[in-house]
Length: 101
Length: 475
Image (tube, each protein chain N blue to C red):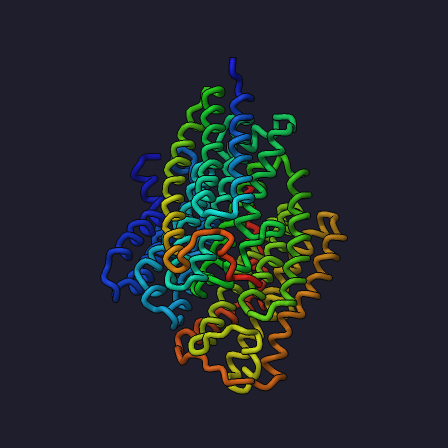
């Protein structure tokens, strides 16, 4: 039988993969966006699993809000990537280091 | 409470959202007056519908009280100041004085309003995201400038990561306590025994907020964003989200997680000392004024964490006072920068040389702003720092107060360097501030109010303490 701990371990793993993706990946801006999405999915897994085991609907409602906002966030992220590509002709994260101090 | 009554109490937010839509769609020449009308209308609606006692709306998800309203009026005033300053920006008036820029600023206010009243993690998260999603495009708006796009991407990735951290922490809290309501969370945590999941959730939430505020070691994005984005966007970024970040910290930690105070006060003190150290020391080495202000912002964030880390009601009151003064100082400094920048595009600190000869009045205003940032007496910055240090000493943490004072003295160097350049060095080339007299008037009023707050600090401090008290749930 699966317990809440199993789900939380799964979401912990998803979260860790997402965070690692953001910090390790230096090649591609789109992979950055995917890693960010993975973090939010980990959060949703947590919320929905907890909501199921606690028999409380608030967690699932929260997950719906997180989903909606994740969509809006990624839309803005993609728009910014397009802006960067237009002026730089690249979205390689390593090439984006003009502003330094 | 009936739905109609609730709608009336939500009127300020409704005016803002509806107004933002109108500003987006109206003809261009109407955008500026309409924006001012919307913000004035919001303040009007707030005053007209002010409840006598703190009132819970939307089944306890949102709080309306007169103390919080004061903070919201402050948010509106700072926004009006920033938007007026932004009109002095000459480089790309078609982008930065457009309907979109104003709409985003108003939506940013909506987010901050939601955060200020949030009593539920969903409302809090929605407010935070509405604010963040307004800031990302605002920074990317100068889209022909490669630097703006680059820093917008940086800010977006780290901002989204910070939201992710915060949310993950919230979801862990929910899994343990089974509630998303901040008041219930607080009472649940008092009964629960400390466990590792709770601790992990708390650390993630604090890390997320430290990212948002730019406290060391989560500050990497801040100097780059201040340097690369357009000045109007940076002005908004430097003042408004600081207020929002403070409100989030008060709600989540001083209210929701009060039972874990032993742990989070220690962590906040670590963040505070690191921020003060890095902010003040690295700022000395900067030659560009914007980067210097960025590192000074990190140091100021350190002070806010120091005040909250004291963990006492007085500490929270002084944190509110500090943030309030800082928002005014930051808006004033960038407003001044926009004014001085109106003709010359360079932003080297050397550009302040000889300002006293060409524009004595503006030099006095810069002097007041820099003294206030440094915490020199005769300006509000002095009391802001003093109250924080008092709260820290009262909490029995005097070694930290000593460290903070020493680092503030170090920090005074780079503010006073600007004053030295203005009064005692000859100009390499003449600065040509714009002749926008309304802008000069506003910047002067902004600076002089800091002197006024020094003259009568007590009412402002009382007000800050009242605000903090409401946030901590009437303790």
